[in-house]
Image (cartoon, rainbow, N blue to C red):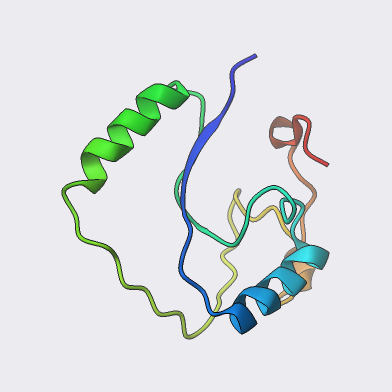
Length: 105
């Protein structure tokens, strides 16, 4: 069985904001205890090994300066990656697809 690899970025977050985000995630995100608040740059893939993906990513990020990001709102996008219970629009809550369950809770 292959391992899916993902590329995430961990933002610098004020303690108050981090605690609020984690409180929301604790009740709505199955991966709350697996990964801290983050931005996903490459969604899980089995096309490259962890080493290949790390080398490729490292070679690409060297080309760009740090990315300043300021969030002012949250929008739920209904797509095949919306695998969490949304406090924003709970009516779109979905169960994890069988292919994404693996050993996750």
